[in-house]
Length: 265
Image (tube, rainbow, N blue to C red; front, side):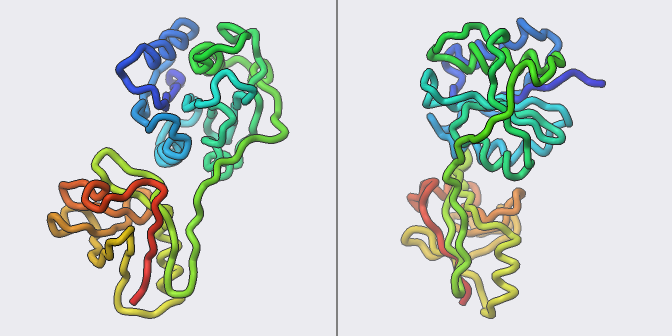
């Protein structure tokens, strides 16, 4: 059996001491654990971005991975800390909605972290990712029984996750994430597009994003014309707006939260 993995996802960046502190706490408790950085470059306080990134990659990790997600604008408040357990994984995060898509997709058991004996301190602090969540993740990686760390939660915060709407001859969706290349990922899935095409007839698909009408569709980035926005189904099975070797976000002036409409003509 291999070493336990704790995967870290935060909005801390790499300039300060924050990420190193998380790792130091974890390694002081379990020096044999494997630490994996998913990313620390999430937008500040970006709960939706955190939810998206976690949902995009968690399935590719080995069974037993512990995901520690610290995007916590409510640190020090009365918000709770959650520990969720699915058939294959564990997820630790503040109770602010960022685990919502995971909890629904995994049908996970949701618990409230109560194991104060395992915290660095029981008082409220400005860095509870370090003082409370990181030690819980570390002790969990050592095999501490989950009942020592948490108890079943009766409720939890749900993220207001946008859902696309399939209307007459169009799908109304929104941009949910911008990657480092400036590609804009929407909430319109390949499955929804296939269903839409099967129930409507027309010669072509057109995507309206902001004031831009995009008619080019390609299978991959390299098959698209240069300097011209196009849309594609990306590796996650979601409709994505891109520009080959350029930033669609900059060219179109669009951001996460902006609406898009996919039409058939």
